[in-house]
Image (cartoon, rainbow, N blue to C red; front, side, top):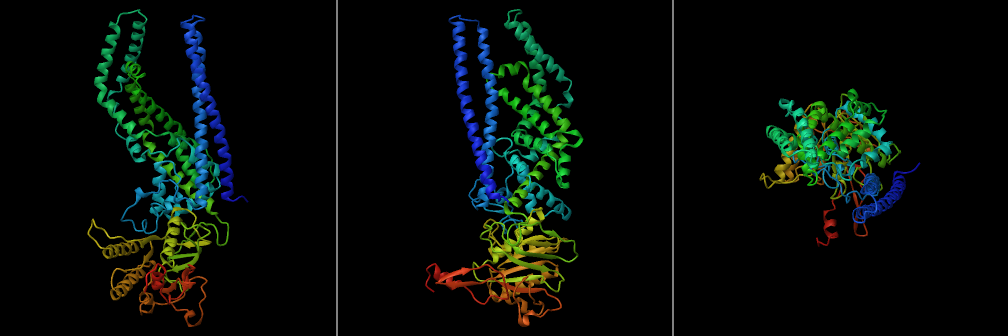
Amino acid sequence: MTSPLDRYRQNLADRTATQKRWSTTEFRISILRLAVMILIFAFAWMAVQRQSFSLIWVAVPVITFLALITVHERVLRKKRRAEQACQFFQSGIDRIEERWREAPSDDGSRFVSADHLYAADLDVLGSGSLYHLLNQTRTRAGEETLAQWLLTPAHVDEVKARQPAVAELMDRGELREEMATLGSEVRSELDPDRLAAWATGEPILRGVARLRWALALAALSNLTCSSLWLAGLTTGRPLGLSLVVSFALFLILRQRIAKVVQGVEQTGRDLQVIAELMDRLERETFDAPWLIARSEELTLDGARPGEEIHKLQKWVERLESRRNAFFAPFGALLLWTSQIAFVVEDWRARWGTRVARWLAVVGELEAAACLGTFAYERGLNIGEDQGVVFPVILDLANTRFEATALGHPLIAPVDCIRNDIALAVGDRDRPQALVISGSNMSGKSTFLRACGLNMVLAWAGAPVVARSMNTTPLSVGASIRIQDSLQEGSSKFYAEIKRLRSVLDLARAELPALCLLDEILHGTNSHDRRIGAAAVVKALLQEEAVVMVTTHDLVLARLTEEDDFDTGSGVSGADVSGPEAAEPAQRRLDNVHFIDTIEDGRIHFDYHLRQGVVTKSNALELMREVGLEV
C-alpha cells in the first residue's frame, strides 16, 4: 500500500511536470499574440498607406488575436490550477514531515477569545495550533466552520453522522485536491455573513420596477440616435433629447441604484472560488448520509447554486467595466449601471433566501474535507500504536473517558510518546480524577493537552490520535495557560481563580465535563494551595466531572491521603502490585506521575505515565544544566 508521503511526492512530481508543460504553452501563445499584433499593424499600414489590399483583410489577424486571447486565458487557468495543485501536495508533504508550522497559512488567530475555556490552553488556535495543522479551506465560510467545530462540541448525533462523512472524504483524494485548487490562486476573502445579509435585505428597486422598461427604451434610443448622428443621417437634436430623458431617469433612480451597486460590490466580489466549489460539489455523488444531505441542500428544487453564484459574479465584473475609460462613454449611453442594478435585484429576489445556507454547506464540506485530509495523512486505522482512529461515542448514564495509546496531535508521530488513560464516574475499576505529579518538563502539561485536544477532535467528528478511545459526551474546561491582565488590573493568581470558577460553572452545566488543571493555584503559598486545591477538586468531583490535576508540588500529590478521597490504580496497564493493588469499594482519586533520569550529567525524560507519586524533583539539576551554581 502506497504511503501518503509517497503518494504526495508522486502527485507533486506529476503536477510539477504538468505545470511546466502549461508554462511552455503559455509562453508560446504569448509570443504568437505578439506576432499577430505586429501583423495587425502591418496589414493596417499596407492597406491604408500602400493600398495593397482592402482594409477589411485586417479583420483576419484581429479575429485571430481575439481567439488567441480566449485560448491564452484558458491556458493560464490550467497553469494556475497546476501551480495550486503543486502547493496543495507540497503543503501535505510539509505536514507529514513536520514543516507545517513554518508554512504560510491562516492559523485561526482571529477567532481567539480570552474567555474561551480551552482554546488558548490547548493550542486550538494560533500559530502551531490544531487549527493551523488542519486548515486547508479556500473560503471564509470554511475557515469559520472549522473554527466553530473545534471550539464548540457537536451533538452526539451530529458527531456520529460526521464520522462516516470524514472517512469517505479521506478516500476522495481527487475531490479534496480539486476543492483546494478550484477558483483563483488565493483564498476567498468573501464575508459569508455580509453576503447573506445583503442577499436577504429589503428590496431596493421594488417601488420603481416599471421604470426598468423605460431604461431599456432610453438605452435603445441613445444607441439608435447616436448611430444615426455619427452616420450623418440626422442632426444631434434627437440624440440630445434622448440623453435628456436618460438623465432624468438617472436622477429619479440615482440613490436606489447607488445602494444596489454599493451593496453588491461590497459583498459580491471574490465569488469565483465559491462558484466553482459549489459547481464541483453539486456534481459529486456521495455515500455517507451526512454528505448526501448537504449535497441535496445545494440542489434543492433543482437549484444550481454554482451556476447562479457564477452569474452573480459575472454581473459584478460587468459593473466594474463602467470604470474602464474606453467603455465608460458606451456605458453611459446604455445606462449600463442602472440596467445591471435591476438584474442584480432580480437575482437577489430569486435566490437571496438560499445564499446563507449555500455558503454554510460549502463551509461544512470544506471543514469535513480538512478532517478527511488529517485522517488520510495520519493513517486512519493502521493499527497498534500508530495512526488515528474514530472514537466510540458511548451512550451511558455514567461519565466515562478512556483511551489506549493516546498521543498529542501536534507532536510528530515518530516523536510522540503515547499513554493510556481511564477515568469514569461511579466505576469500581477506574478513578474519577488523577493527580499527575512530576518534575519540571517531564510531560505533565503536554499530557493534559493531548487529552484535551483529542477530545476536541472527537467532538468535531474527526479521528483521534490513539489506538482506541471511548467517551461519553463531555465538555472541556482547562486552566493551563493563564496570563495576568494589565488592562483589567488582575494578577495571574486572580486570573487563575476566575478561570477555576468558570471551569466549575462548566461542570455544573447539564453536560458532564472533562476538567484539565495544570499546576493548580501555583501562585499562592503551599498551605493555601493545598486547602484550595482540595476544595476545587472535591467540588468538581461532586458535580460528576472527570478531572486531571498536575503538580510538581509533592504536598498536593498527597491529596489522595485525605479522608474525603479514595485511592486506587488509574493507569490502564500500569504495573501495580502489593498492598496498593487492593480494590476499594469506590475509587475517586488516584496518583500517577512522570519521571526523569540523569545520564552523563544531563536530564532525560521518557514521558511515560506511571502509577503513584513522583519521588524526586529536578529543579536543581536543571539550574546546574543551564550554568547556575547551586
